[in-house]
Amino acid sequence: MKDKEVRKWQDDEALKRFRLISPLIDDGTDEGKRLALREEIAAKNGISKRTLYRYEAAYRADGFNGLRPQDREKHRVQGLPENWDEILGQAIQLKREVPKRSVRQIIKILETEGWAAPGALKKSTLQRHLYDAGFGVKQMKKVSEGREKTSSRRFCRPHRMELVQGDIKYGPTIVTADGEKIKTYLSSLIDDHSRLILQAEFYDNQREEIVEDTFHKAILKYGVFDATYLDNGTQYRTDTLEKSLARLGIRVLHARVRAAESKGKIEKYHQVVDSFIEEIRVEKVHTLSELNYKWKVYLEQEYQKEAHAGIAEYYQSYGVDVPSCGITPEQEFNRDTRGLTFVDVHVVSEAFLHLETRQIDNAGCFTLNGIRYEASAALANVEAVIAFDPMNTESVEVRYRDMEPFPAHRLRIGAYADKKPAVSVAMTDELPETSRLLHALEKKYKEDHHETAYALSFEDYGKEGTDHV
Image (cartoon, rainbow, N blue to C red):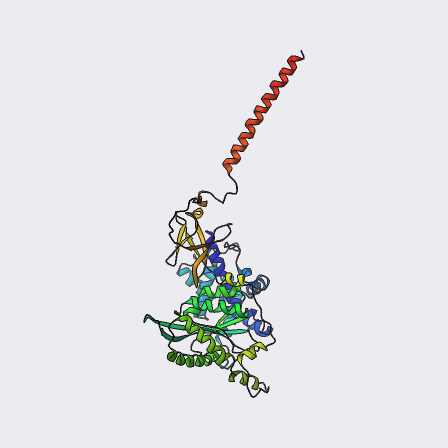
């Protein structure tokens, strides 16, 4: 398997495991609830609780990297079919569809559909594995009885940076000096406890890259947080975003469909955005940068520094007196006793980089997102990994084996050609550190001169011997 396929598989598997244990690594969850959650997750996903314990321990020991499998080869218990994982997965699905299906019926279906050869599956073996996965008879009866659903209630985390909510809102349409109309979209992140806006910026698109950029900038300014709460828009349902946040130890939670009440804080904030949009229509800005500057001023003065009714209501619900002037999001965020956790800027940047593989052509160039880049003639005809920030593609980073990563810039054809084109590393298995030809010549040179010196020395010895006779 190629290295890039292995890396992608390992990252994908690590993300799957992180999603499984995400609710279990929340330090705010009491142990009793964590035990119940672990049983629920194990039953729902067809894995054992022991496996979940192992994933949790690996994550706490080495973060996201601890969840990356080391080898794709799965060691199979002797006697089980080679496709046992697929068979067990299908058996679990069949049990979910009809909880009262017997193991005998499941085996019959699996054999009929071609998942297993007749007689290959033993009833006791499949029954044991179904039980370990949480799909035994008694377990399924308990599940079928249903869990008591709690009513939707308002919530607020007790400290800053425990939970951050995100959303995208349509912004104003700006008209440039040339008469071009540009639709804008506001991507925002709000701290659940203090209601402080950690990052909010208008963009000229609503692609997934603007969401990543919003998180990137917020983390650089305020540090990492425990979890983020997002809706189910396609921009928030990407593996790239989840992998980036998982590398920084941030869990991703999604609101239930049509659960508008759970997004009340950010919807309230959007009322402030609506007021700004009304004002900006009168102002008539012509560029995106001008729009964002005026928004930055408005946000700070009309929201961050203004008393927030929701904060006062939160404290009053606990019987705590609130000053008559109220509490602003900025005040509430700054006075919180929980410390901020900052991460090195290079670590944050690395977490949000996109990685794609490209074939370098004969000229040492490659194409990324329709843009031509110049790497190096030394990498002609090799396959390299390109690391890049989708919000800044003026230059990207080229990574190849053990070489020091180097930047590649957009191709610009100059007035003169490169005088000394490099030799492609594709002509060798690895980058040479010395010239093997020079070493071979030097070795031959020493051997030749050693023989000459020996011959001269023997001749002199013979002459000396003749003289003494």
